[in-house]
Length: 117
View 1 (cartoon, rainbow, N blue to C red):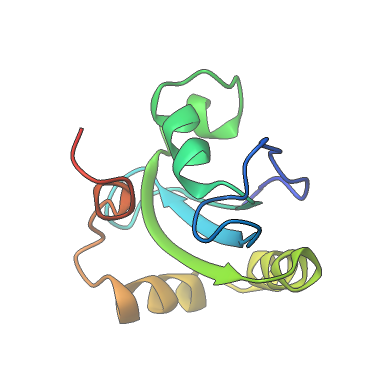
View 2 (view 1 turned 45 degrees about the vertical axis):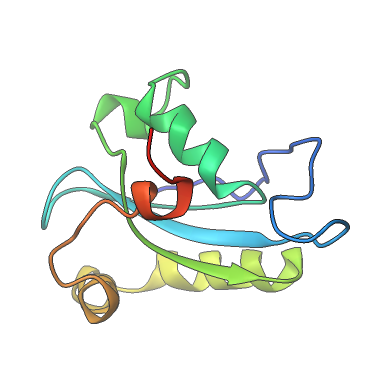
């Protein structure tokens, strides 16, 4: 499993209150039980949209990993990066369990956070 340790920068605050900045650790899947990808960003909606539109030549494009199945929000980048690195070291069964505790049907959470198209 691979992922980006650098934040995809934006010119906004990552959503939410003015001046508030949030950071997200996320897990993408190709399908239920499929290939997983863990990353970190300060703009989750934009990052998922980039992967869904396949604008980025990457692991996620090659393996069609664009279903947002899990994410966590942090207030500071250091904790987000630490969590991302920790999750990447987990074995697959632990990652699947983490996803299924919050999202048992592996639904794509993008529409819940981004709203209707």
